[in-house]
Image 1: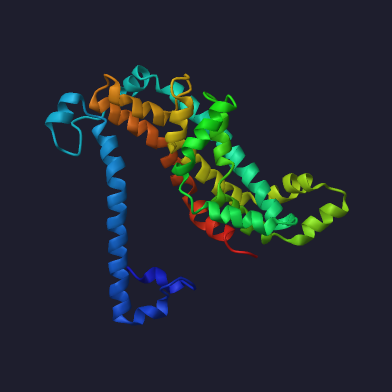
Image 2 (image 1 turned 90 degrees about the vertical axis):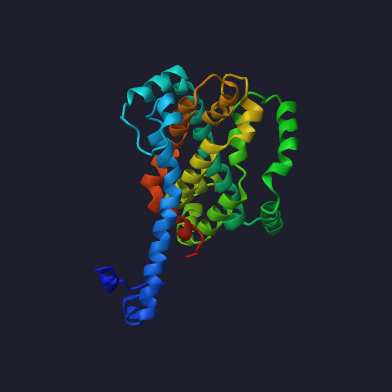
Length: 292
């Protein structure tokens, strides 16, 4: 029963004819058990947060059980209204939307220049981009914060958007994907008189929907969970994001259960996005890294 699905497999590490060996069968079962345990370990914290959020403060402190005594969704609604969480969702949504646009357009444009146009010196620029991946982002946060203040962007979403428009890893994904696109479309567009920007927006991007989706999903999850830069640029401006609000609970009068419900609110959007697009994330990111 367990190995029946392998009869139709034509690729992968373990194929049906490999299962004639008892050692391979045992190894397959052990790998499957390890994967199940990894899933349990990964899912237990968010499940615990969600279930504990149904408890009141007395039950939370008194009962160490996993399951609550009752499931009252009205408690979530009350916490949402009391903490005015809708405003922080809107702020995070604005931050995420701009970050996705910048992540796709700016990283895509650089990848288009380095992978398709290839002007003089493109190898040097690409080498610098690769070198930038060796530098921890936190080492430049002070200089970045100083420059943000100098040009008057403190309290604005613009620095958050632009920071996601300069990501070396996403640029490399775009570049590798663009280099595998059919060159005939590009040559035909040039013969029709299209400029380089027109080719990028009218030809390259429509042909790159798969890798755009991958980068967009990465940008959504990264922007939503980002704390340090939004805290430095938006804190106290009335544009606080969800992650900033969670940090501010350390000095608030909210109960432990209110904080758990707020944490549950914060993990819902990226969880839903990952659940819906997990196949695109796992499949297209591999496709984007392979030429041809």
